[in-house]
Image 1 (cartoon, protein in one colour):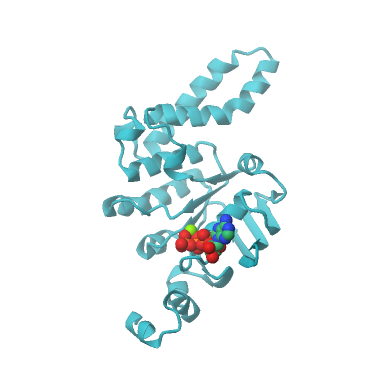
Image 2 (tube, rainbow, N blue to C red):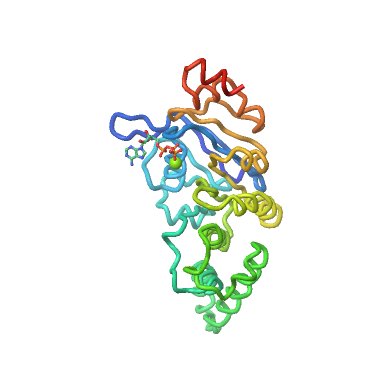
Length: 263
Ligand SMILES: Nc1ncnc2c1ncn2[C@@H]1O[C@H](COP(=O)(O)OP(=O)(O)OP(=O)(O)O)[C@@H](O)[C@H]1O
Ligand SMILES: [Mg+2]
């Protein structure tokens, strides 16, 4: 249990009469990149919504050994669950460094409360700490040249990296990424794989990645889960899971001609 960053046991989600997830179990070790694939409507985003507490579910969720499924979303975040929300959260008229500084200060609020008990100049301590970590993350994520640029001046792909940096600055144990490559340029997609591998190596968090771009996913994920209509239908090495007959059928339907074309 101790070595598992994320453990999910038998998660079930019902939307009215629709069972969107049916006893899904997954896990991820610290420093592991786990992929989730499946056709549209398979339940991938619902799984992330359930893990982060945005839709009610039955079953168990543990972050770093702590059971979190009874917790509110912000409590799960404090327990180490990070999730990227893409553009919506970023202020477009703020610079990249300020954006990260603020995200970092939110994390340090707790430290501020503790140090004020001892009458230390907490805000100054926290501010220098948050700026330092923000600068480190800017370098780590290759954002150096954009440091003083406004969010609105960035490409969609670079904005997504900044958003990911805002998640990472909270030092999560587990990061959930829902289609990081969607809507960004091919060149930026190609840069994602080395970035994700580098982050995994340097930060040691577990990454769970939903991705339709198979070359990207296969180049980063050590283990892949295949989902169809709310169920895990395959799990294993990515190359095996994408060739699994059940997974192929889930994408192509039962049309023999379509399956033949895929070979
Ligand atoms: N809030 C909701 N209320 C009712 N049904 C929902 C809700 N959210 C998702 N669903 C349904 O649950 C199923 C799973 O949807 P989900 O968005 O998780 O799929 P997905 O695997 O993320 O698909 P995609 O690849 O298109 O993003 C779908 O049938 C969807 O219509
Ligand atoms: Mg989705």
